[in-house]
Image 1 (cartoon, rainbow, N blue to C red):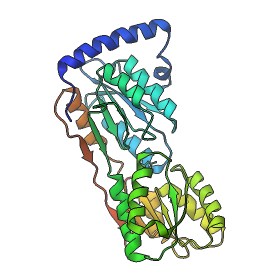
Image 2 (cartoon, helix red, strand yellow):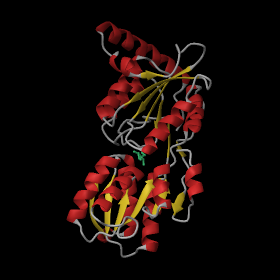
Image 3 (cartoon, helix red, strand yellow):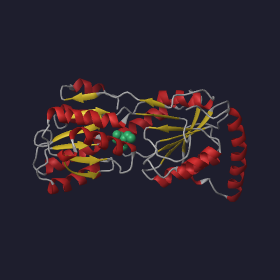
Image 4 (cartoon, rainbow, N blue to C red):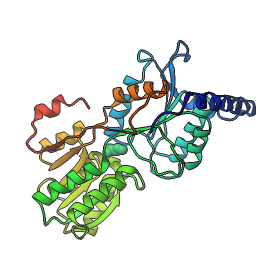
Length: 331
Ligand code: AHR
């Protein structure tokens, strides 16, 4: 997939400018701009104007990802960033995206909270001729060439790696699965890949903890009642796994021993739980790709060709890691 031809961008920008003038005249389109946290100056001096819709701040992973994005999409790096946090609500993201169109940014980047429901706004962005860089999570859309490029981890590979470890080490495990936000790319892909490797007959039940520690704990409390035989939890992220530890301990059981825990992310708290032998295996989802994103954004703005997908490299960790490894972890 390549970037929009320059002529198309010029024509579309003209249309978008007229549209944003009429929106301004009607008093519309200004809400998110005032809500937005602008990390830059006036957008002068040849800076690339980037509108970034982050989906929320639900997890340690997301916090690290936001820090990486903000540290890399900087004026020093030639970018004027307008960053908006959607608080895990798709409607907030759609509003932010529309505001970016009204502001006539040069590039829109966003991490979609769920996969579907973006057709209308993606068509509007396309009509305005603004290139889209998809970050972290995937979308399913009927809009052709809705985005120029996608950077993020291979969520299916992560689920597969977790499943392969469980199959090799606990082939008879009775599994409970703590799912991420329902309908999100990582929930769908991790779950499908994990379930295929371990076999659906091994899974006693599933519930969503929405990728947060608090909801992970609540879901686990209910699961401990519903599935007293469970002896392994596959959690779609560290935060929900950490919530599960609290629920397991409150129920008088030993996490990592009575109930094994396999998670995805490898943030520092997650790796600490691994060193403490409360987690048994952690598959990394690396959030620190701000520099790669900034390079992509610059190429996209310049109309250069970019790869359709940039897969961020992930590792895996078992209980052989040391406290020094955890202490050296940047996030
Ligand atoms: O999309 C990446 C996932 O989103 C991370 O695994 C999770 O922690 C975050 O909330």
